[in-house]
Length: 210
Image 1 (cartoon, helix red, strand yellow):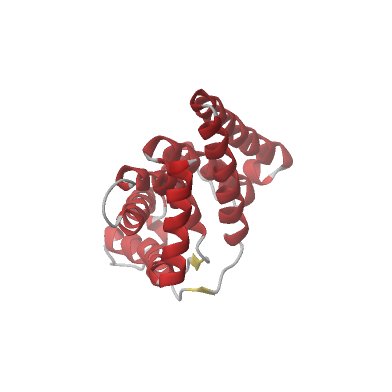
Image 2 (cartoon, rainbow, N blue to C red):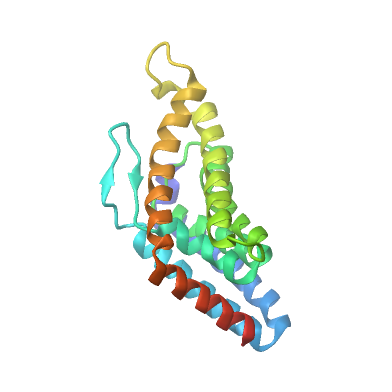
């Protein structure tokens, strides 16, 4: 199936699915008038940033998996700005974008776990948008959701790569947790810097007032 999604037809299919989801988000958002236009515009910018930064890989871990620069953050921050619904739609849209640009697919279930759920669950950050420390708690929740989805995918579909005698759950946890939580740690340090934290908080307050 990687060959399909790596082909022009497969890429168009994934991009088409992303467009459909984004249009669904637009349709939902327009019910809120001017605020809907704002949600749509900010989401589009955040997903563009996430996609661009997914190609910026400062390093790769010894056991595989690449650490990108803040790509997951720009998906989770949609939920922080606007709540759970827009966050989940942003995550689902991003999953199809990633399926188009970096497809690794062996079965529909694996694709759902690694892409639709793996990236889509980043949007659960929106569940913590109104809580104290929601920027950090939401990010951690979204990243943890992605980890759980990829953990299951690793056990179900990639266990053949585990070293002989190694527990497949441990292998999947080390492999997927390695690059996911390494990026998360770096991101948490960056967004904890006062200038960054202040800028993100001011943006959220501005969106809430507009």
